[in-house]
Amino acid sequence: MPLARVRIASRPMNVEPDDAARSAQLQLLPLFDDLERVLRSEQDSEAFAFFGEIRRWIERAIGAEDLMGPFMQLATTAFRGFDLTPASHMAVDRILETAQALSFTLSADRKISH
Image (cartoon, rainbow, N blue to C red; front, side, top):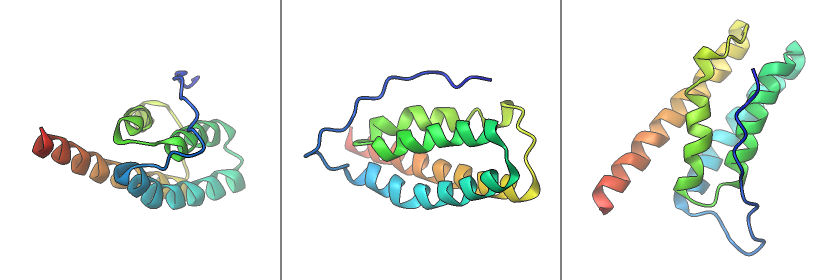
């Protein structure tokens, strides 16, 4: 199933991610690295492409609003029909749990600031 195309602006060279984006990058990117190693060893190119694209979106995030697209795509994981092994399933679960916790934190922060 092709990944929905979302246009992501490239980050200007002098702009650093805000705290929300940086926190997501610090927490999620190592988990994506782990998953990519597992998927590469299992030669699961479909899942590798899907999660690789989401990883790149998170890498490029500058603000909390930039995380909405990749988090929404992560929410579709269960409906993608991937045939995950126990090892890749565990790695995906860690990503989903972390992304969910980050989403709750971002949502709570937005409610407090508005």
